[in-house]
Image (cartoon, rainbow, N blue to C red; front, top):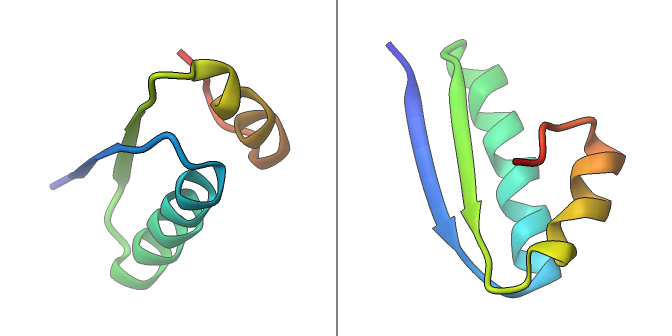
Length: 57
């Protein structure tokens, strides 16, 4: 079983909170989670992905 979360935001803060929340959910539930953030400004996601060690496609 895998949990897929899709979030659409252009807010740096919201994207960061989605990432943190997904990590907490994954840890608490013990189930792999996939988070996809859709943003009109993809450059916003790059610093978060780099800081959190995430894949940025």
